[in-house]
Length: 293
Image (tube, rainbow, N blue to C red; front, side):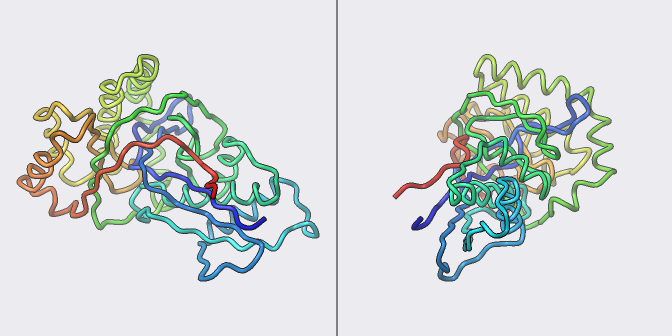
């Protein structure tokens, strides 16, 4: 083994998130921005890896049944393009990439569902490790519904300076609020299922907007109404999504023909006073990948 490199995309929050069958489930809005986990047998230069990624390495060894005497001396390095504590799946991407890289180092590659179970032992988890748009039980990892659909659109990501750590959001109070919305969210879920069946970007965008509106009761986003009102003015806007446990907002676009006009309107409405970092990403539902060469 020379070195193993695994990539995992991040997200702009979730397309939908809420209670289904008494469990919190979500569909991540994957974007083309990545975390990379590198594993080598020899010491890596300037290596860096957070505690969660290191936990993923250790838990993966345990999951594989690697005894202490058979453990390899592995050095783990994590590099990421994803902002931390904004709801862009930075932790999940780090953890998932570290887990797959570890399993490859032992020549025992894990399936996405196995990695998801490892990730949820560390914290509530996004569905970015799967290679198609996926509905996922974010706390237990027990429910996985892959769609085999990789919808292609753009996301105009509105990123504020405000941070929210995953653990501080997932309180009993917020969990109860999600439960109270279960009946309303069932209609969002039904619309999502129709979007998947028809492969309809318009219905997917509508479901995302409805889920984002519900989330305003739980974690309100500044200038949310102003952002939502923009969509009626532009044909390219599919809908609005949010990080349900983070701070970013996404404007989902079928193309970039009106991007500059939308940004100008956001500036005019003073939205950029809070969301002072705006970037455009392609959607990405490719999941974990070993990087060759």
